[in-house]
Amino acid sequence: MKSSLKTPLVLVLLLFVASAIQAQTKRIKRPKSSVGIYSVDTFVRNSFDIYDKVYRYDGYAKAGKSLDDDDIDILEDALTDAELLMTSAPNILSDLDGAGALKQAKATLQINKAKKALKYSIKTATELLAGRRSGNEDSEDTSEGDTKDDDSNSEEASSESGTGTSSPGGSSDGPSSTFKINSKFDFVPGDELLFFDDYSNDFIGDFPSKWNTNGSGEVVTFNDNNERWLEILSGYGIYYMPLDVDLPEEYTIEFDLFGYGLDSKTSSTAKLQILLSDNTKFKQGEYWAAAWIPFGQYGAFGIQVKSYAYGEGHTINNTITADIRKATLNRPHISIAVNKERFRLWVNEKKYIDIPKMLTQKDQIKALKFHAEGFKDGKEKIFIRNVKIAKGGLDLRRTLLSEGKVSTNGILFDSGSATIQPQSYGILRQISQVLQQDSSMKLLIVGHTDSDGSDSNNLALSKSRAASVKQALITTYGVDGSRLSTDGKGEGEPVADNSSVDGKAKNRRVVFIRK
Image (cartoon, rainbow, N blue to C red; front, top):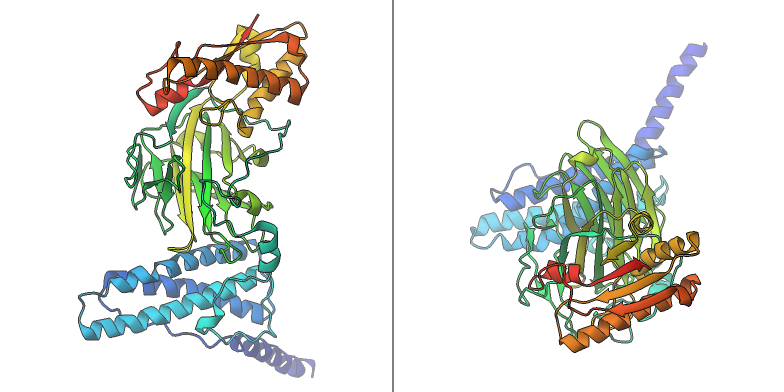
């Protein structure tokens, strides 16, 4: 008797689950045949591959099944890929020019069907990841108007962050001209310059000569400002690489970022990937580590970090909680320190990432690559400048104590002035610690410049910069001013060729000498 009751009960449960799964959106059918235009067929195939994944997980949600960590990883990747594919749709349509009328008609129908599948995927994956997809929700509407990014927090984000559409040239909405000195900022740039580029040797409108890409880009300026920036195009599989840089085991990376056209509707997938890879090809590679800087403004999306080793898969795969929306609207300075396996990342003066064992295949990592994704074409743009890679970045304190002298080009000043930039305070903190440890030590601070400008102006500037360093040590770290003296040599004692960008960067330095 019990067994006869058990079978119908199982059938009832199966029917309940089946009906819950069937309650989701009616499935969009994949086209049965190809068009014969490579870009169109690839777009359609990739779109439906993503759609199939998301549709399956939507079915799980309707049946009441919760997502595990692997499910979340798959959905996050699917969402990113769907957003990127959607941005490429206009370019795919342009590939129909020259095709016959019947082929154009068939291709247009398939592209529209693929776009509908992508819109469903973006909306559904976003809701699944946010935990807002359930068996009671009506998800049948996949019309044009139902595919916007989730902006439930957009009003709050807008009032918090502003629009961010100003240029680096400096309007009232532009980058902040003030900063709060953080005496705990501990980033120290490497002391052996491997690469530096401010694009000063490149023509406006050209792709910079010290870089390589499989996409496009150009050097630009804004308004009446002379600062030069490299525009990085957003797109699937597009990478930007500094040329002729072989990364050592210990090094630092620095650069300035500028996001244009950001507002409360900027997508959660708008990110800049900073990729450390085992090769100089236009792909991630077999061994790599990466961090993604988020630019989405309608929510705090965090900084994603991943590392990958061939045969092992992801050794690190996580998102660090971080609300950097305000920072991304104000030309953030990114600092990265790699010390063998350890990976640290700062946005402005705040450290967000410090992973001791991120680069488990440290001997394989050779190249730095940048990749932008998720930015709306024609509306949102991403730019970088002052990219600097330097070997070392360990500890200036030991050098100063053991050798009595240390030289650094990591103390940065505003162009043509003695105003210290905030990312320089990690070095000043270390110098102050040496003075604190050895109370009898006195230091001579000597400023040096490159050869731009007149000899007399450079001499005066170098003296002013040394005086600014002294004053920062006194006011920020409480060093007794009687222990510090200053001098400036202008451009008179170069350590490198002033005819190159790298050489000028090496010559702009501050030297600390024990007296």
